[in-house]
Length: 190
Ligand SMILES: Cc1cc2nc3c(=O)[nH]c(=O)nc-3n(C[C@H](O)[C@H](O)[C@H](O)COP(=O)(O)O)c2cc1C
Image (cartoon, rainbow, N blue to C red):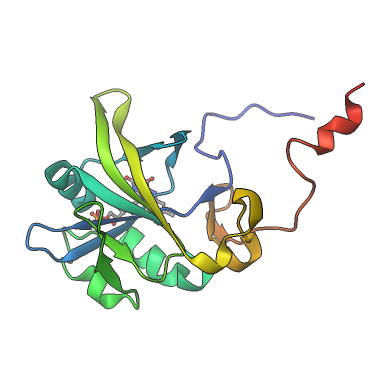
């Protein structure tokens, strides 16, 4: 039996995405953002609540970094996703994460994140009914060298990226490989 339910944001799983920006005084702010995605090879889109300190910082600096954390850092990632820099300006200092400046954009990179996108704001969509969206151009990607494999592939086990699962509000790990993409379907092609 199938059942109809109202629309819910349960397209799942989503990578945990961490937005790092500088506050006006140069201190670091970090927030958790699950509602983001890849629009094109070098374009990302983020759905953000305008009340966030991160949004204020992005609008002022016109840039940010988006880091993909490992599961081991999930407690810090959750913490900065439930406490706003507007309420606690030093929230980043309460984590065990370490920041260093990007050479490409005026935003911090987080040492512990194995992959980080260095991004510049490309377009802002601010619509009362639809919401607030930032489309960003990826200027560069900083990645831990040891996870790079042949033919542009990455070692997913070693990366151990954290996922957010909105189906049951949990964080999760990569599961086992099921099949090779763009090739397992070939068996059906006559
Ligand atoms: C798992 C998770 C996912 C989140 N995803 C988003 C998101 O996609 N967009 C958003 O605006 N806020 C999202 N948030 C909420 C912000 O991370 C949170 O409000 C944070 O405190 C904002 O920090 P700031 O005000 O310092 O920028 C998420 C929080 C969690 C825990």
